Each structure stands twice: as C-alpha cells, then as structure tokens.
Length: 80
View 1: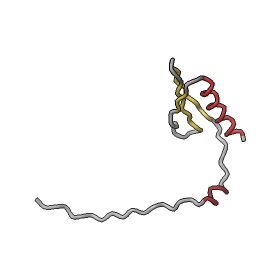
View 2: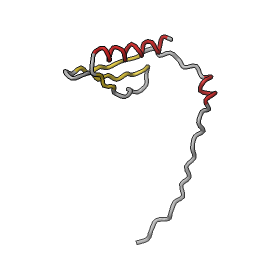
View 3: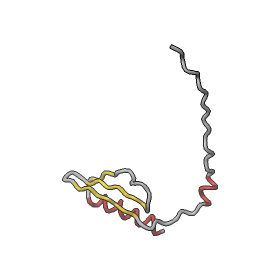
View 4: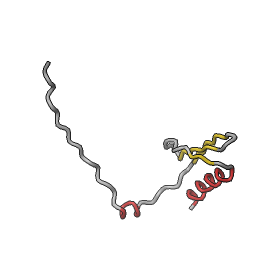
C-alpha cells in the first residue's frame, strides 16, 4: 500500500481586539431577554436567551430567591 502524500496545514490566528477597542464599543441593549426555568423539589435550573442569540448555559439554584436574583440581575444589567 502506498502512503498518501503528507499535506501541510497552516493555521492563522485571527487578530484579537485590544482592550481599548473593546472599551470604545457601546453594547446594545437587549430588546428581549427570555428566561426558561425548570423547577424541581431540590432546586431550580434556568437558562436565558438574549434577542435572537443562542440559549445560554444552564444555571443551577437551590432556592427561589437565588433564581429571582438571577432574573433581576438580567433586568438590572439591561436597563443601565
């Protein structure tokens, strides 16, 4: 059997944004924040979706108060 030719691959990294560029960007306020909650006897799980983005990471909470603080923090972050 013959071995296939060894192919050479080059990997080019995309330039990273500098801290100054990130600071100068104004973040747009979300028009819609969706929060999905899953309620169990032992706790709560919630995930959020901002505008037309993907569904975020599921967060785990032990109490209803912690879940409500999570939801309230989204509202506070978007309204400022």
